[in-house]
Amino acid sequence: MTLLRSTPVLLILGVLAACSSAPSADDVEQAMEANIRATIARQEQWAEQIGGTGATDFMHSLGVPEAHDIDISDVAIQHSTQLDSGDYRLDVTYKATVADVSRRSSTQVILGQRDGKWTVLN
Image (cartoon, rainbow, N blue to C red; front, side):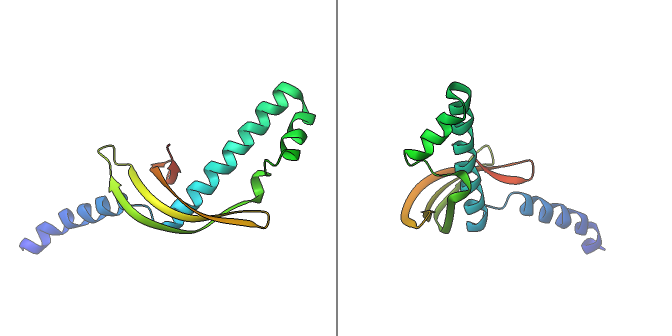
């Protein structure tokens, strides 16, 4: 009888644990890539507002990549801390590739779930 009474409590705890789990390396990779691409898209919009389409072309001639040319891969989470807000502070290493040039790097990101997906907050 006790098991039947505790089953709803166990189910609720299981659902809460699933909702509050830390982001995976794949989640971090997707969030970082989306953040970088959105940043470049915003810069292109600002350049176009200020100087028209020629300004965007000029940005790219200076070496700013097209947003779709950026690839984040090989993400490894070195350390993860859940913050009081429920978001996560993560120390990660990753490989960034633009065109044919790849570079390994590390950074600290804060990720939070927004609209059901992980989003870079810093």
